[in-house]
Length: 396
Image (tube, rainbow, N blue to C red; front, top):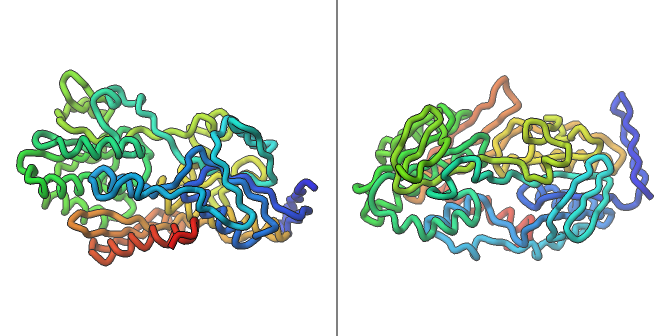
């Protein structure tokens, strides 16, 4: 029997007439995994959830820094989706070729799926070609493949100018450019080449972490102590292979011997063709993450909800979307809004990690609380990863 929703203006309970709740979750990142886990926990055998991703394994975004600086091997950070064994959840490794948000039908390279609720959690892709010269003479470390390549490139850099440059905004994990600069400093210091190298950081913000002045001050101080040149409110518009120079958006030319880029982010092509996007991203109701299509939610990096593109915010959005779906299944309404709150860890180098707790929607403007870098917070970050491995994959 098909699911029937009756939306009542006075927000009285929504009635669902069906034994099993059919849910399609597109994308198995932070948002998709958390939402699938919640629905399985709360609905269990009454759930028929299909989780689709084109990849066969998951990895935490911060693990790419570990790979590029040789702290971990690629195989050590990947977690196979075959570990997902949750009541009512089925994982399908398939490439999505079309999304129909009106009929809630998804077509893949091997078949099609239909559901009562659809959740888009496909994240953001990277447009390397949007920055002329990046592919030819630069490097990027936001893709897994890019981080793996840099594992071999960085050890060969022993003298000259290194630039960590943002090529477009918004971009995932706002602290990551600062982390790369600080970790590169540690690497070169340990290798004995720091005095022969310069490090510059180019970002489009006025400060490293705009919602948290204290976190930004701590990072700027760390840059000054390590003689890292910080260039705010600029982005890299192109790379000149002949001059080996990065061209900033104000025309400034910066020579480089090593360029570590953060490429422009875009929505996956299949999402852009679905009719769901506006100005490149999916708009949603900020309170409940609903799109303009009934029973279709979007969470995480794919949206323009107003929080950073980071896993912890996708996870928070997933909690609210899941609560709304569970409430509907039970003939109720979820009245708890998405708060836009989350915590981001920041690698300061020397084995120390800081943290910023950010809240985007509770006050008149976003604000963040800074926790100074320490070995204790490095252990806290490790627990952050292991706890989610246990929750999502049953790995302890």
